[in-house]
Image 1: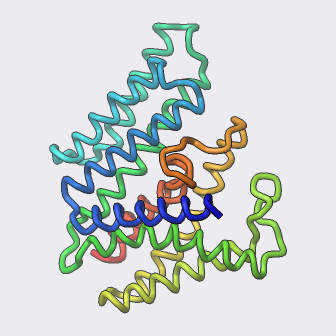
Image 2: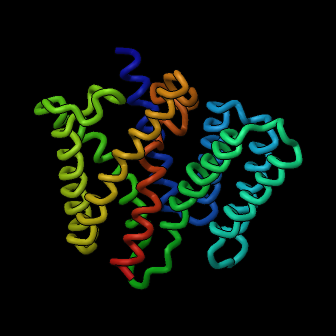
Length: 267
């Protein structure tokens, strides 16, 4: 019972931070997104024991440069530029320190950079979208509606109706019925949310449904990494939830999806 209330309280505090930062936007949300990305990237590197390695240290340098670029410089295709530059540095480290690092370590460091700071940066980028006539804080909240809303609905439907295992080896408790319920539930929440805040109902329902589908892939992908490396949680930062990657595993993939779909359907 104590564990439940600890998890509930920390979840409420986290939700309050997410809502407050989303409403304020600007530097407040930027600072929060940067902090989440730094901690999440460190958690990822620790799984692969790369946090003190040259590839990991260079990754942190490029993480800071990437976020500075997002905030201060108007550089088109900044993410692509940073990814290519970081890859070149990783290859240089690989060949000039050979055989200190294995190919797998170089690939893991690069994956971590894409997976954590780059994808999470779309939390802030979505909030700052220049969409005429739209309050982008409302679009920002769709990221969390489709990820955490899907998670809640999938759990409820799975408990009530779940019979067919979705990924029996990786996550035996998740069901096909729960996954479908999560997508429908997220779409319904998005539809209601749009009605409350005078957004396009069809667009919001579509965005939340699409986000819910990829959010479940993100959840399972994070679980797969933990299983491969025999760890229960990525960290202990959020009591009752684990680390940043444990709580934001689905948000990592929904943020860029909502950003892309918002650009396509809401411009």
